[in-house]
Image (cartoon, rainbow, N blue to C red; front, side, top):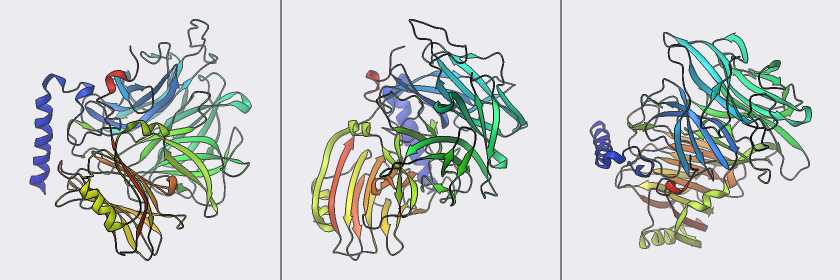
Length: 526
Protein backbone atom coordinates (compact mmCIF):
# COMPACT_ATOMS: atom_id res chain seq x y z
CA UNK A 1 0.00 0.00 0.00
CA UNK A 2 2.84 2.39 0.80
CA UNK A 3 4.51 1.67 -2.56
CA UNK A 4 1.23 2.13 -4.42
CA UNK A 5 0.60 5.43 -2.68
CA UNK A 6 3.98 6.78 -3.76
CA UNK A 7 3.41 5.52 -7.31
CA UNK A 8 0.16 7.50 -7.43
CA UNK A 9 1.97 10.60 -6.23
CA UNK A 10 4.65 10.12 -8.89
CA UNK A 11 1.92 9.92 -11.55
CA UNK A 12 0.42 13.15 -10.24
CA UNK A 13 3.82 14.87 -10.25
CA UNK A 14 4.55 13.70 -13.81
CA UNK A 15 1.22 15.09 -14.94
CA UNK A 16 2.09 18.44 -13.41
CA UNK A 17 5.57 18.54 -14.93
CA UNK A 18 4.11 17.81 -18.34
CA UNK A 19 1.97 20.92 -18.17
CA UNK A 20 5.09 23.07 -17.91
CA UNK A 21 4.33 26.75 -17.94
CA UNK A 22 0.61 26.01 -17.62
CA UNK A 23 1.10 24.45 -14.20
CA UNK A 24 -0.91 27.00 -12.28
CA UNK A 25 -3.09 28.32 -15.08
CA UNK A 26 -6.72 27.75 -14.29
CA UNK A 27 -7.39 25.78 -17.47
CA UNK A 28 -4.70 23.25 -16.49
CA UNK A 29 -6.52 21.97 -13.42
CA UNK A 30 -6.21 18.37 -14.53
CA UNK A 31 -4.16 16.53 -11.90
CA UNK A 32 -5.46 13.00 -11.14
CA UNK A 33 -7.33 13.92 -7.93
CA UNK A 34 -8.09 17.54 -8.79
CA UNK A 35 -11.85 18.14 -8.30
CA UNK A 36 -13.44 19.21 -11.56
CA UNK A 37 -16.55 20.93 -10.22
CA UNK A 38 -15.48 21.90 -6.71
CA UNK A 39 -13.29 24.92 -6.02
CA UNK A 40 -9.64 24.25 -5.20
CA UNK A 41 -6.71 26.69 -5.19
CA UNK A 42 -4.18 26.39 -8.01
CA UNK A 43 -1.60 25.40 -5.43
CA UNK A 44 -0.95 25.26 -1.69
CA UNK A 45 -3.22 24.81 1.33
CA UNK A 46 -6.81 25.99 1.73
CA UNK A 47 -9.32 25.47 4.52
CA UNK A 48 -12.38 27.43 5.74
CA UNK A 49 -14.58 29.39 3.31
CA UNK A 50 -14.70 33.02 4.44
CA UNK A 51 -16.61 36.14 3.49
CA UNK A 52 -19.16 34.56 1.13
CA UNK A 53 -21.05 37.48 -0.37
CA UNK A 54 -22.83 38.61 -3.55
CA UNK A 55 -21.99 42.11 -4.75
CA UNK A 56 -22.48 43.91 -8.06
CA UNK A 57 -23.11 40.79 -10.12
CA UNK A 58 -20.42 38.62 -8.54
CA UNK A 59 -20.33 35.89 -5.94
CA UNK A 60 -17.21 36.21 -3.80
CA UNK A 61 -15.48 33.30 -2.13
CA UNK A 62 -12.72 34.17 0.30
CA UNK A 63 -10.94 31.35 2.07
CA UNK A 64 -8.25 30.49 4.57
CA UNK A 65 -5.10 30.16 2.51
CA UNK A 66 -1.40 29.50 2.95
CA UNK A 67 0.36 30.97 -0.11
CA UNK A 68 3.70 29.55 1.07
CA UNK A 69 3.03 25.82 1.45
CA UNK A 70 0.71 22.83 1.29
CA UNK A 71 0.03 22.55 5.04
CA UNK A 72 -1.69 24.92 7.46
CA UNK A 73 0.24 28.11 8.26
CA UNK A 74 0.73 31.75 7.17
CA UNK A 75 -3.03 32.21 7.03
CA UNK A 76 -4.22 34.82 4.52
CA UNK A 77 -7.52 35.33 2.77
CA UNK A 78 -7.44 33.87 -0.74
CA UNK A 79 -10.14 35.04 -3.12
CA UNK A 80 -12.19 33.84 -6.08
CA UNK A 81 -15.20 35.24 -7.93
CA UNK A 82 -18.00 33.61 -9.89
CA UNK A 83 -21.17 34.44 -11.76
CA UNK A 84 -23.00 31.26 -10.69
CA UNK A 85 -21.39 29.94 -7.47
CA UNK A 86 -19.84 27.11 -9.52
CA UNK A 87 -17.37 28.45 -12.10
CA UNK A 88 -14.74 30.25 -10.06
CA UNK A 89 -11.93 32.56 -11.14
CA UNK A 90 -9.07 32.71 -8.66
CA UNK A 91 -7.82 36.21 -7.81
CA UNK A 92 -4.71 37.34 -5.90
CA UNK A 93 -4.66 37.15 -2.10
CA UNK A 94 -7.18 39.62 -0.69
CA UNK A 95 -6.18 40.19 2.95
CA UNK A 96 -2.63 39.28 3.95
CA UNK A 97 -1.05 38.26 7.22
CA UNK A 98 1.28 40.79 8.83
CA UNK A 99 4.37 38.68 9.36
CA UNK A 100 5.75 38.82 12.83
CA UNK A 101 2.47 40.27 14.14
CA UNK A 102 -0.66 38.32 13.23
CA UNK A 103 -2.25 35.90 10.80
CA UNK A 104 -5.70 36.32 9.23
CA UNK A 105 -8.21 33.78 10.52
CA UNK A 106 -11.84 33.24 9.51
CA UNK A 107 -14.50 35.92 9.22
CA UNK A 108 -17.23 37.36 7.02
CA UNK A 109 -17.95 40.11 4.50
CA UNK A 110 -21.04 42.32 4.35
CA UNK A 111 -22.33 44.85 1.86
CA UNK A 112 -22.57 48.16 3.72
CA UNK A 113 -25.20 49.55 1.36
CA UNK A 114 -25.99 52.69 3.34
CA UNK A 115 -22.39 53.41 4.40
CA UNK A 116 -23.16 52.92 8.09
CA UNK A 117 -19.41 52.57 8.64
CA UNK A 118 -18.49 55.84 6.96
CA UNK A 119 -15.76 53.96 5.10
CA UNK A 120 -17.40 53.74 1.68
CA UNK A 121 -16.53 56.16 -1.11
CA UNK A 122 -19.73 57.23 -2.86
CA UNK A 123 -19.48 56.68 -6.62
CA UNK A 124 -22.09 57.14 -9.34
CA UNK A 125 -24.84 57.42 -6.76
CA UNK A 126 -23.78 54.19 -5.00
CA UNK A 127 -22.77 54.90 -1.42
CA UNK A 128 -22.07 51.27 -0.40
CA UNK A 129 -18.95 49.08 -0.28
CA UNK A 130 -17.69 45.75 1.01
CA UNK A 131 -16.62 45.47 4.64
CA UNK A 132 -14.73 42.45 5.97
CA UNK A 133 -14.75 41.50 9.65
CA UNK A 134 -12.19 38.83 10.54
CA UNK A 135 -9.92 37.53 13.27
CA UNK A 136 -6.37 38.78 13.66
CA UNK A 137 -4.51 36.00 15.48
CA UNK A 138 -1.28 36.63 17.33
CA UNK A 139 0.76 33.48 17.79
CA UNK A 140 3.86 32.71 19.79
CA UNK A 141 5.82 29.46 19.90
CA UNK A 142 3.17 27.81 17.72
CA UNK A 143 0.26 28.74 19.99
CA UNK A 144 -2.51 31.32 19.78
CA UNK A 145 -1.93 33.93 22.48
CA UNK A 146 -4.37 36.66 21.49
CA UNK A 147 -7.27 36.94 19.05
CA UNK A 148 -9.38 39.99 18.26
CA UNK A 149 -11.68 41.14 15.48
CA UNK A 150 -10.37 43.42 12.75
CA UNK A 151 -12.09 45.31 9.97
CA UNK A 152 -11.00 46.08 6.40
CA UNK A 153 -12.96 47.64 3.57
CA UNK A 154 -12.95 47.67 -0.22
CA UNK A 155 -14.26 50.29 -2.63
CA UNK A 156 -13.27 48.41 -5.80
CA UNK A 157 -15.44 45.26 -5.70
CA UNK A 158 -13.08 43.41 -3.38
CA UNK A 159 -9.95 43.71 -5.51
CA UNK A 160 -8.02 45.72 -2.93
CA UNK A 161 -8.59 46.11 0.80
CA UNK A 162 -7.74 48.86 3.29
CA UNK A 163 -7.28 48.03 6.96
CA UNK A 164 -9.35 50.18 9.31
CA UNK A 165 -6.89 52.26 11.41
CA UNK A 166 -9.01 51.88 14.56
CA UNK A 167 -8.57 48.08 14.77
CA UNK A 168 -9.38 45.98 16.70
CA UNK A 169 -13.11 46.62 16.66
CA UNK A 170 -13.89 43.84 19.17
CA UNK A 171 -11.48 42.43 21.75
CA UNK A 172 -12.13 40.30 24.83
CA UNK A 173 -8.46 39.84 25.71
CA UNK A 174 -8.71 36.12 24.97
CA UNK A 175 -6.54 33.67 23.00
CA UNK A 176 -9.55 31.91 21.41
CA UNK A 177 -12.00 34.70 20.47
CA UNK A 178 -12.55 34.24 16.73
CA UNK A 179 -14.54 33.57 13.54
CA UNK A 180 -16.99 36.52 13.40
CA UNK A 181 -20.08 36.14 11.23
CA UNK A 182 -21.87 39.49 10.77
CA UNK A 183 -25.37 40.08 9.39
CA UNK A 184 -27.92 42.90 9.23
CA UNK A 185 -30.81 42.51 11.70
CA UNK A 186 -33.59 44.50 10.03
CA UNK A 187 -36.14 44.61 12.92
CA UNK A 188 -33.75 46.72 15.00
CA UNK A 189 -31.79 48.27 12.12
CA UNK A 190 -28.43 47.09 13.40
CA UNK A 191 -25.56 44.76 12.65
CA UNK A 192 -25.22 41.57 14.67
CA UNK A 193 -22.00 39.60 15.11
CA UNK A 194 -21.71 36.02 16.33
CA UNK A 195 -18.21 34.88 17.25
CA UNK A 196 -16.84 32.13 19.50
CA UNK A 197 -14.74 31.56 22.54
CA UNK A 198 -13.55 28.35 20.96
CA UNK A 199 -12.01 26.58 23.95
CA UNK A 200 -14.85 27.56 26.30
CA UNK A 201 -17.44 26.35 23.77
CA UNK A 202 -19.42 29.60 23.84
CA UNK A 203 -20.98 31.82 21.18
CA UNK A 204 -20.63 35.55 21.86
CA UNK A 205 -23.31 37.86 20.43
CA UNK A 206 -22.52 41.53 19.73
CA UNK A 207 -24.33 44.36 17.99
CA UNK A 208 -23.31 47.58 16.27
CA UNK A 209 -24.78 50.44 14.25
CA UNK A 210 -21.60 51.31 12.36
CA UNK A 211 -19.56 48.07 12.14
CA UNK A 212 -16.76 49.79 14.09
CA UNK A 213 -18.04 49.95 17.66
CA UNK A 214 -19.41 46.65 18.99
CA UNK A 215 -21.34 45.98 22.19
CA UNK A 216 -21.46 42.50 23.70
CA UNK A 217 -25.11 41.57 24.35
CA UNK A 218 -25.09 37.91 25.40
CA UNK A 219 -23.47 34.53 25.14
CA UNK A 220 -24.72 31.03 24.45
CA UNK A 221 -23.13 27.75 25.49
CA UNK A 222 -21.55 25.37 26.15
CA UNK A 223 -24.93 23.62 25.69
CA UNK A 224 -23.79 20.34 27.21
CA UNK A 225 -20.51 20.07 25.27
CA UNK A 226 -17.61 19.24 27.54
CA UNK A 227 -14.74 18.64 25.08
CA UNK A 228 -13.39 20.07 21.86
CA UNK A 229 -13.70 23.53 20.34
CA UNK A 230 -16.52 25.56 18.83
CA UNK A 231 -15.62 27.33 15.60
CA UNK A 232 -17.13 29.25 12.66
CA UNK A 233 -20.60 30.09 14.05
CA UNK A 234 -23.56 31.40 12.08
CA UNK A 235 -27.06 32.53 12.97
CA UNK A 236 -29.95 32.88 10.52
CA UNK A 237 -33.73 32.59 10.23
CA UNK A 238 -35.61 30.15 7.99
CA UNK A 239 -39.30 29.40 7.49
CA UNK A 240 -40.48 25.95 8.50
CA UNK A 241 -41.93 24.33 5.39
CA UNK A 242 -45.62 23.51 5.60
CA UNK A 243 -46.25 25.91 8.48
CA UNK A 244 -46.63 29.63 9.16
CA UNK A 245 -43.72 29.79 11.60
CA UNK A 246 -40.04 30.44 11.22
CA UNK A 247 -37.10 29.41 13.37
CA UNK A 248 -33.57 30.63 13.98
CA UNK A 249 -30.67 28.29 13.31
CA UNK A 250 -27.46 28.60 15.33
CA UNK A 251 -24.59 26.82 13.57
CA UNK A 252 -21.56 25.62 15.50
CA UNK A 253 -18.68 23.88 13.77
CA UNK A 254 -17.27 21.38 16.24
CA UNK A 255 -13.65 20.19 16.48
CA UNK A 256 -13.49 17.35 17.43
CA UNK A 257 -16.63 15.43 18.41
CA UNK A 258 -18.45 14.83 15.12
CA UNK A 259 -20.34 11.54 14.59
CA UNK A 260 -17.74 10.23 12.10
CA UNK A 261 -14.84 11.44 14.23
CA UNK A 262 -12.89 14.67 14.12
CA UNK A 263 -14.53 17.79 12.75
CA UNK A 264 -18.18 18.35 11.91
CA UNK A 265 -21.04 20.85 11.68
CA UNK A 266 -23.66 21.01 14.41
CA UNK A 267 -26.76 23.20 14.64
CA UNK A 268 -29.46 24.13 17.14
CA UNK A 269 -33.00 25.30 16.41
CA UNK A 270 -34.47 28.14 18.45
CA UNK A 271 -35.40 31.82 18.63
CA UNK A 272 -33.52 35.12 18.50
CA UNK A 273 -34.74 38.52 19.72
CA UNK A 274 -31.88 40.63 18.40
CA UNK A 275 -29.79 40.19 21.55
CA UNK A 276 -30.10 36.58 22.69
CA UNK A 277 -30.48 33.16 21.14
CA UNK A 278 -32.65 30.62 22.99
CA UNK A 279 -32.51 26.98 21.90
CA UNK A 280 -35.62 24.84 21.70
CA UNK A 281 -35.71 21.69 23.79
CA UNK A 282 -33.48 18.89 22.58
CA UNK A 283 -29.82 18.44 21.79
CA UNK A 284 -28.05 19.89 18.80
CA UNK A 285 -28.24 18.04 15.47
CA UNK A 286 -25.62 17.31 12.82
CA UNK A 287 -25.74 18.88 9.38
CA UNK A 288 -23.53 16.26 7.73
CA UNK A 289 -22.67 12.72 8.86
CA UNK A 290 -19.74 12.19 6.53
CA UNK A 291 -16.14 12.68 7.51
CA UNK A 292 -15.44 15.81 5.46
CA UNK A 293 -17.75 18.79 5.85
CA UNK A 294 -16.66 21.62 8.12
CA UNK A 295 -16.35 25.38 8.70
CA UNK A 296 -19.60 26.24 6.92
CA UNK A 297 -20.44 29.75 5.88
CA UNK A 298 -23.58 31.28 4.38
CA UNK A 299 -23.66 33.69 1.43
CA UNK A 300 -24.64 37.25 2.39
CA UNK A 301 -26.63 39.72 0.30
CA UNK A 302 -27.96 37.39 -2.40
CA UNK A 303 -29.94 39.26 -5.09
CA UNK A 304 -33.38 40.41 -3.87
CA UNK A 305 -35.15 37.98 -6.22
CA UNK A 306 -33.15 35.07 -4.79
CA UNK A 307 -34.80 34.12 -1.52
CA UNK A 308 -32.57 31.10 -0.90
CA UNK A 309 -30.22 30.62 2.03
CA UNK A 310 -27.06 29.06 0.59
CA UNK A 311 -23.92 27.85 2.31
CA UNK A 312 -20.68 26.03 1.56
CA UNK A 313 -18.23 24.07 3.69
CA UNK A 314 -14.63 22.93 3.57
CA UNK A 315 -14.29 19.31 2.40
CA UNK A 316 -11.70 17.89 4.79
CA UNK A 317 -11.12 16.96 8.42
CA UNK A 318 -8.50 18.28 10.84
CA UNK A 319 -7.58 14.67 11.66
CA UNK A 320 -5.69 14.47 8.35
CA UNK A 321 -6.05 17.78 6.49
CA UNK A 322 -2.27 18.33 6.38
CA UNK A 323 -1.59 14.77 5.16
CA UNK A 324 -3.96 14.27 2.24
CA UNK A 325 -2.06 12.98 -0.82
CA UNK A 326 -2.63 16.02 -3.06
CA UNK A 327 0.86 17.45 -2.68
CA UNK A 328 0.49 20.41 -5.07
CA UNK A 329 -2.73 21.67 -3.48
CA UNK A 330 -4.76 20.68 -0.45
CA UNK A 331 -8.35 21.42 0.47
CA UNK A 332 -11.59 21.80 -1.51
CA UNK A 333 -14.89 23.58 -1.01
CA UNK A 334 -18.22 21.78 -1.16
CA UNK A 335 -20.93 22.36 -3.68
CA UNK A 336 -23.12 25.28 -2.61
CA UNK A 337 -26.21 23.98 -0.84
CA UNK A 338 -29.63 25.58 -0.40
CA UNK A 339 -30.99 25.29 3.14
CA UNK A 340 -34.51 24.80 4.43
CA UNK A 341 -36.29 23.63 7.58
CA UNK A 342 -38.76 20.75 7.69
CA UNK A 343 -40.62 18.96 10.43
CA UNK A 344 -39.34 15.40 10.01
CA UNK A 345 -40.12 12.56 12.40
CA UNK A 346 -41.51 14.99 14.96
CA UNK A 347 -38.61 17.43 14.96
CA UNK A 348 -37.61 20.52 12.97
CA UNK A 349 -34.50 19.62 10.97
CA UNK A 350 -32.16 21.36 8.56
CA UNK A 351 -32.45 20.10 4.97
CA UNK A 352 -29.75 20.66 2.34
CA UNK A 353 -30.08 20.50 -1.43
CA UNK A 354 -27.48 21.14 -4.12
CA UNK A 355 -28.27 24.51 -5.69
CA UNK A 356 -30.30 24.32 -8.90
CA UNK A 357 -27.39 25.81 -10.85
CA UNK A 358 -25.62 22.44 -10.61
CA UNK A 359 -27.86 21.26 -13.47
CA UNK A 360 -25.71 23.44 -15.74
CA UNK A 361 -22.85 21.03 -15.11
CA UNK A 362 -24.68 18.17 -16.85
CA UNK A 363 -22.66 17.50 -19.99
CA UNK A 364 -24.22 14.23 -21.13
CA UNK A 365 -26.95 11.84 -20.00
CA UNK A 366 -25.45 8.37 -19.54
CA UNK A 367 -28.40 6.42 -18.20
CA UNK A 368 -32.14 6.76 -17.58
CA UNK A 369 -34.11 3.70 -16.44
CA UNK A 370 -37.18 3.02 -14.31
CA UNK A 371 -39.05 0.06 -12.86
CA UNK A 372 -36.21 -2.43 -13.35
CA UNK A 373 -34.46 -4.95 -11.12
CA UNK A 374 -30.96 -4.46 -9.75
CA UNK A 375 -29.68 -7.07 -12.22
CA UNK A 376 -31.39 -5.37 -15.18
CA UNK A 377 -30.01 -1.97 -14.19
CA UNK A 378 -26.50 -3.41 -13.90
CA UNK A 379 -26.82 -4.88 -17.40
CA UNK A 380 -27.69 -1.41 -18.72
CA UNK A 381 -24.66 0.03 -16.89
CA UNK A 382 -22.39 -2.58 -18.45
CA UNK A 383 -23.83 -2.40 -21.96
CA UNK A 384 -23.76 1.40 -22.07
CA UNK A 385 -20.33 1.55 -20.38
CA UNK A 386 -21.64 3.93 -17.73
CA UNK A 387 -18.63 5.09 -15.74
CA UNK A 388 -16.60 8.18 -14.96
CA UNK A 389 -14.89 10.31 -12.35
CA UNK A 390 -17.32 13.27 -12.57
CA UNK A 391 -20.89 12.00 -12.23
CA UNK A 392 -24.28 13.02 -10.90
CA UNK A 393 -26.48 10.07 -9.92
CA UNK A 394 -30.12 10.01 -8.83
CA UNK A 395 -31.56 6.67 -7.63
CA UNK A 396 -34.80 5.68 -5.92
CA UNK A 397 -35.04 2.13 -4.56
CA UNK A 398 -37.95 -0.14 -3.69
CA UNK A 399 -36.05 -2.50 -1.37
CA UNK A 400 -38.71 -5.17 -0.77
CA UNK A 401 -37.11 -7.52 1.78
CA UNK A 402 -33.52 -6.32 1.30
CA UNK A 403 -31.41 -5.64 4.38
CA UNK A 404 -28.58 -3.92 2.51
CA UNK A 405 -28.70 -2.25 -0.91
CA UNK A 406 -27.08 0.65 -2.71
CA UNK A 407 -24.34 1.51 -5.18
CA UNK A 408 -20.58 1.13 -5.51
CA UNK A 409 -18.76 4.16 -6.96
CA UNK A 410 -15.32 4.66 -8.50
CA UNK A 411 -15.15 0.88 -8.72
CA UNK A 412 -11.99 -0.78 -9.98
CA UNK A 413 -10.34 -4.20 -9.78
CA UNK A 414 -9.44 -3.78 -6.11
CA UNK A 415 -11.33 -0.75 -4.85
CA UNK A 416 -14.68 0.95 -4.58
CA UNK A 417 -16.56 3.47 -2.46
CA UNK A 418 -19.89 2.06 -1.28
CA UNK A 419 -23.00 4.13 -0.59
CA UNK A 420 -25.96 2.19 0.69
CA UNK A 421 -28.88 1.64 3.02
CA UNK A 422 -29.04 -0.79 5.91
CA UNK A 423 -32.14 -2.35 7.45
CA UNK A 424 -33.25 -2.98 10.11
CA UNK A 425 -32.05 0.16 11.82
CA UNK A 426 -32.88 2.41 8.88
CA UNK A 427 -29.45 3.90 8.28
CA UNK A 428 -27.52 5.13 5.26
CA UNK A 429 -23.77 4.64 5.03
CA UNK A 430 -20.67 5.56 3.06
CA UNK A 431 -17.86 3.00 3.24
CA UNK A 432 -14.49 4.20 1.94
CA UNK A 433 -12.43 1.44 3.54
CA UNK A 434 -11.40 0.25 0.07
CA UNK A 435 -11.80 3.55 -1.77
CA UNK A 436 -8.19 3.84 -2.95
CA UNK A 437 -5.29 5.48 -1.13
CA UNK A 438 -6.36 5.28 2.52
CA UNK A 439 -2.97 4.76 4.16
CA UNK A 440 -1.89 8.35 4.72
CA UNK A 441 -3.81 8.54 8.02
CA UNK A 442 -5.21 5.94 10.41
CA UNK A 443 -8.30 8.15 10.72
CA UNK A 444 -9.14 8.16 7.01
CA UNK A 445 -10.50 4.68 6.15
CA UNK A 446 -13.82 3.59 7.60
CA UNK A 447 -17.58 3.51 7.28
CA UNK A 448 -19.81 6.43 8.25
CA UNK A 449 -23.48 5.88 9.06
CA UNK A 450 -26.42 8.24 9.47
CA UNK A 451 -30.11 7.94 10.30
CA UNK A 452 -32.81 7.67 7.64
CA UNK A 453 -35.56 9.77 9.19
CA UNK A 454 -38.28 8.78 6.69
CA UNK A 455 -38.01 5.03 5.93
CA UNK A 456 -40.96 5.28 3.57
CA UNK A 457 -38.53 6.37 0.86
CA UNK A 458 -35.02 5.30 -0.13
CA UNK A 459 -33.46 7.78 -2.52
CA UNK A 460 -29.91 8.96 -3.17
CA UNK A 461 -28.67 12.04 -5.00
CA UNK A 462 -24.90 11.68 -5.37
CA UNK A 463 -22.19 13.92 -6.81
CA UNK A 464 -18.96 12.07 -7.60
CA UNK A 465 -15.89 14.18 -8.29
CA UNK A 466 -12.31 13.02 -8.75
CA UNK A 467 -11.65 13.00 -5.02
CA UNK A 468 -14.99 13.48 -3.28
CA UNK A 469 -18.47 12.04 -2.90
CA UNK A 470 -21.40 14.18 -1.71
CA UNK A 471 -24.52 12.15 -0.89
CA UNK A 472 -27.96 13.73 -0.36
CA UNK A 473 -30.46 11.24 1.07
CA UNK A 474 -34.24 11.53 0.68
CA UNK A 475 -34.15 15.05 -0.68
CA UNK A 476 -31.34 16.22 1.58
CA UNK A 477 -32.86 15.23 4.92
CA UNK A 478 -29.56 13.45 5.61
CA UNK A 479 -26.23 14.33 3.99
CA UNK A 480 -22.80 12.64 3.99
CA UNK A 481 -19.66 14.20 2.47
CA UNK A 482 -16.41 12.27 2.05
CA UNK A 483 -13.04 12.64 0.34
CA UNK A 484 -11.71 9.65 -1.64
CA UNK A 485 -8.44 8.98 -3.49
CA UNK A 486 -9.05 6.18 -6.02
CA UNK A 487 -6.78 5.01 -8.82
CA UNK A 488 -7.24 6.64 -12.22
CA UNK A 489 -8.65 3.45 -13.70
CA UNK A 490 -11.31 3.06 -10.97
CA UNK A 491 -14.25 4.61 -12.79
CA UNK A 492 -17.04 2.02 -12.61
CA UNK A 493 -20.42 1.99 -10.88
CA UNK A 494 -22.41 -1.07 -9.80
CA UNK A 495 -25.67 -1.52 -7.92
CA UNK A 496 -26.07 -4.15 -5.21
CA UNK A 497 -28.73 -5.71 -2.99
CA UNK A 498 -28.94 -8.80 -0.84
CA UNK A 499 -32.44 -9.45 -2.21
CA UNK A 500 -33.25 -10.18 -5.89
CA UNK A 501 -36.65 -8.58 -5.32
CA UNK A 502 -35.18 -5.06 -4.91
CA UNK A 503 -36.35 -2.74 -7.68
CA UNK A 504 -34.94 0.45 -9.09
CA UNK A 505 -37.89 2.84 -9.13
CA UNK A 506 -35.83 5.27 -11.19
CA UNK A 507 -32.17 5.91 -11.94
CA UNK A 508 -30.48 8.68 -13.90
CA UNK A 509 -26.77 9.29 -14.42
CA UNK A 510 -25.08 12.31 -15.98
CA UNK A 511 -21.48 13.03 -16.86
CA UNK A 512 -20.59 16.42 -15.39
CA UNK A 513 -18.40 19.02 -17.04
CA UNK A 514 -15.28 20.61 -15.61
CA UNK A 515 -15.62 24.14 -14.25
CA UNK A 516 -11.95 24.74 -15.11
CA UNK A 517 -12.14 23.96 -18.82
CA UNK A 518 -14.83 26.60 -19.16
CA UNK A 519 -13.36 28.99 -16.63
CA UNK A 520 -11.89 31.41 -19.16
CA UNK A 521 -15.40 32.75 -19.79
CA UNK A 522 -16.47 32.69 -16.14
CA UNK A 523 -16.09 35.17 -13.33
CA UNK A 524 -15.39 38.79 -14.22
CA UNK A 525 -12.74 40.80 -15.91
CA UNK A 526 -10.41 42.80 -13.73
